[in-house]
Image (tube, rainbow, N blue to C red; front, side, top):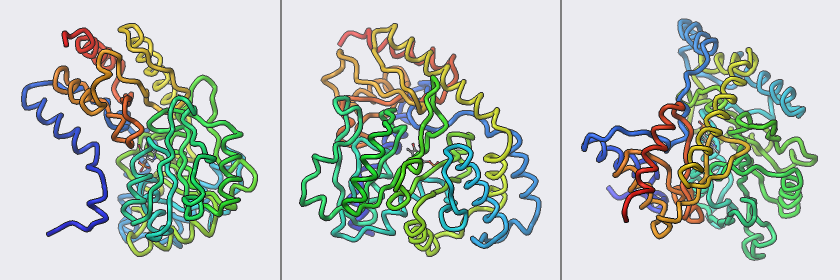
Length: 394
Ligand SMILES: Cc1ncc(COP(=O)(O)O)c(C=O)c1O
């Protein structure tokens, strides 16, 4: 019953460790405030849910879905139009758009589609875990690109050893960034594109937080920059923008040849998306967008509240321009603890769940991530409880 070696290479999944700690605390009667997982707390807007319900009643929609089906063609067209409107990027709906069962699914499978055992994937560290875990599952070689405050959480391509560069086949980037909340400049994106072109590297950009941006900041698509389509694909998610995390729908766009290989890989594994979900996604992308404006305002308010409240209790936390996270250095008083030890302490003592920085890779050590997925009253309560831990005798 021994697991495959590729599975043994994986670190234990962060959220399963946290779940165990939560369970222990709940057994002791602790009431939990969960700011761990980036799991949106808002309901999916009603017009999207209504479309799902309506389409679910049609038994024709209960069958396997195929990429040539009318609904998938319409969804691809809706995605291409959304891209044109949002980023002024033109996409061919047939060859440059690929619907996914959540962007995580596509990100995992793109490594499987391209990496041989002697191919290197360049992955910033810390990162959203499937960026590196997908590489390990596919049996590729993982090369970390450390990102930290000194380099504004942007990887330094010049630091990659020549030997590694020769074997590099893919690079993962994601801005606005989870977990660090960093955003990237136009010059960084342009540099990344020319670096990948020069070195024949597939550039994977994960833009899951394109809509969750504050203070007038607009998160660009990498496809806005010239030559990007020669090397790049970009992943999107409806999970955050339309609070559809449980529905499992996302998409990839960009280089047609790369997407064809990803579609081929998926074709051996899945049967596409439940058709009513595809209809609902079309509603999300083409329907009224006030729900999105309201959602962003709500996250912005939570961000403002939380940063101010944490600063007030002596925990200085930077104010992010995008994402619904805060990326915070462990307070001085507890700097001798690892991020996992600090997170365990908070769960054990006061039932507040954060994510340890090392859940996103070893270079996340020294940090914790707050996901702002509870309402303001609960956030206030979380800060009060955290204050108790900061004032505890140690
Ligand atoms: C950077 C990033 N990419 C992808 C995902 C996964 O999104 P989806 O629900 O579309 O699989 C997440 C979810 O938290 C994320 O943070």
